[in-house]
Amino acid sequence: MAEAITVARPYAEAVFRLALESKDLSQWSKILQIAAEIAQDDQIKLLVGNPLVSAIQLSELILEIGGKKFTREARNFIKLMVENKRVHVMPQVMELFEQLKAQHEGVLEAKIITAFKLEGGQLDKLVTDLEKKFNRKVEAQVSVDPEIIGGVKVEIGDEIFDASVRGKLEAMTIALKS
Image (cartoon, rainbow, N blue to C red; front, side):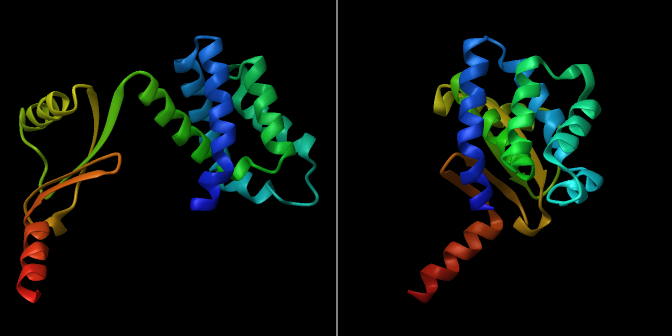
């Protein structure tokens, strides 16, 4: 996975610079989302790397699937990705682009993991508290993982705030062993 991210990074950065210049970040987000979905399609995956399918045929197929949703620049970008045999990293390009976009817009992405679905305003309160702490807008991706037993675990960038029961039990285990 790290290799795909490494390969995708220059493409994502180039598209991001292009999107900034044209002041079209949201349109590029949509374009990359569509391109990533096409690249992840099982039938397209079979064609990628198939010696019987030329780069021109593959790029024409992808562009036909995307239709009018692709701008001229997007069409050129997709052709470049196909020619360079990089279609398989399109989802990572999209992911990195979204990270650059969020960073540019001053938005932090938070992964919030809870043992149970948050009720009512609990999520809103948690997001508001995080926004106050980081003094930036926070966009939350919430998932439920019953294995954390109770509480919440928040990941923002490199920082992890583990207020889960499982996390506390693991910390107690380590303390008791030392």
